[in-house]
Length: 286
Image 1 (cartoon, one colour):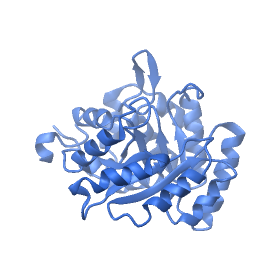
Image 2 (cartoon, rainbow, N blue to C red):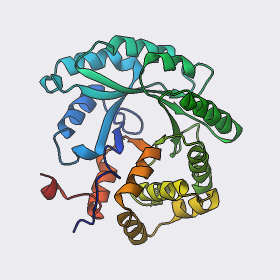
Image 3 (cartoon, helix red, strand yellow):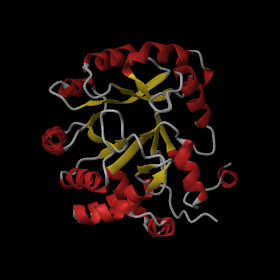
Image 4 (spheres, helix red, strand yellow):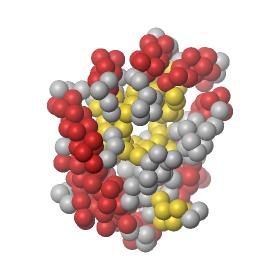
């Protein structure tokens, strides 16, 4: 039985990062599958397709070859990884500027001295930040841009990579506390594949429901230690009950702060939410 009292909490929550590790789907397959899902049972919960900026020309060709993009363009976020120069992203935006088959929803890059060059491109900007002192400086920089009426979102990595250790609940709580205190919207990337915090295939992973509830607590003034406790919770029933108890205004406030997250397997968290009764079943959606 579905317990879902409202839609805003999960609406367009999961950005499709199929082409990025560990998924690494070929771009042609990722575009095809993403367009298929636009009319599938989970369409309301899926955001844009995330694509490397260096693939802009190939993306344009694929979109032009698919009749489904005529009149309903393929929505994409263009990404360059942290440590990469901003120029490929600027070039990709120029490549797609007048393309009626592709709609660029954001440009994403890592925080550096170059990131502000993207502010003149007239697209929403998503900036991935690091840890500790660098994170504080980056978030202050982003907050200053928001104060100047730029559309800027902070991004933080929740999963481990060869160059990035898994951020435990204290580290993630510190980020949530920092962005909410600055009134900065944020998105997450990497590692948020499951609804509930736990160990999966022998590795610790954060849970989507945990993050939603921690964000709810943060916007209501909770401190980082309390947020860490929420992020560490592994009792699915407790989490589901708490999420089900959020009202529409609560959900809207959460999503004003936590805008989206990228996942290479968008159906993984959505099917778990469905099994927990938090989004309608396939039968009810169709």
